[in-house]
Length: 270
Image (cartoon, rainbow, N blue to C red; front, side, top):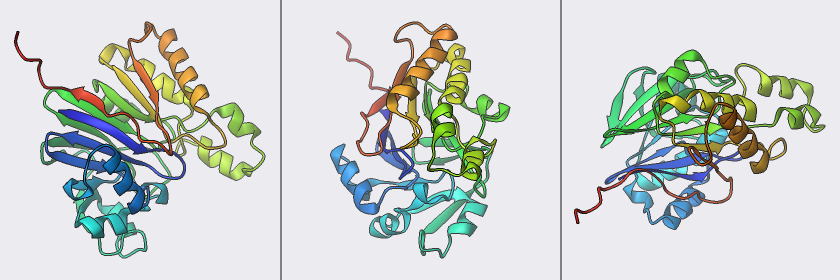
């Protein structure tokens, strides 16, 4: 079995569970330790069975539960050297045990193969991931201002992609609560992907075996599930996708997603 479950995704916190057999890994720990434990229990997983936490970057909505959850469960955190330097000794991480990796260098946590790669975002050393088990692969593209050619090549061929659809550009431009400087940061090439930008990335993946898109990290004020899913489906349709050829699901900040299966046990012979 190889699967992914989004425990929560949005501007207030991000955390996903990836399972391959007995190996269980969290991607980011941006929910409180209490919420991570609670949401794991909702899908029948004990916090003590987690093998480790993979970090995309050091922003608080991806690491806020790190220190307490790792201390409670004696877990290692896997991140880049620069990310570890920023977090080490901070109130967010405390004396967490860091295992450092280099973007572009593959490694494994149990049965899960991990390929980290650099992405453009306003963090110290942000990365995306392709996680693999057997012949199946899963991509994470969150928190990036634009999808570089290298990032496109890395996620090409994954069957499921978790991708940021942070904002609707018109809603962001019209928002009166954000100063122009913040809007510029979000819209910059080191900011966040819009619905349209994410849809274009997914459309480019159609001919490479994409079967599912999980949309995440939606802005509370400048986006909605209807806008994100509608724009992505429109981009996929324009690129030639038919009907339900690609499943599109929008992750929630407050509710746990279904457990998305990437591979299953073969059916018994009749």
